[in-house]
Image (cartoon, one colour):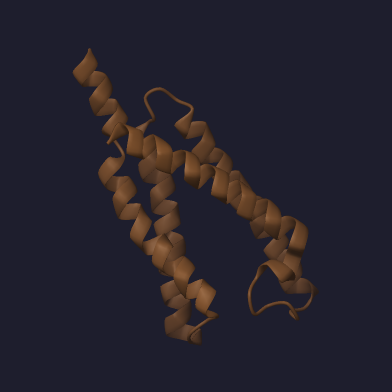
Length: 130
């Protein structure tokens, strides 16, 4: 389980940094269905890209610790889950978005329980070794 946590945390960190940088560079073109959005949406999307890249850096910081701090995994997973729940709220209030956004929502709602379950895997393994 500790290896799984480490692999998933690395993947999350790298993916979030890459996605965030892509949004910073591509602007509206990075958001399916928003290619023709105005400058306000472009500005917001690029800003959120920088925030998402920073979120990914936080995952990379956590995964470089030994053991990976369970509190960091839980906090970062909670933020990810909150993002997924925000998409649910958006659907309830504004309707169904582009299909790719629905796929992202599924990941954002499905992955956090896995992280919550694995959060203390390395800490437990370190205690068992001691």
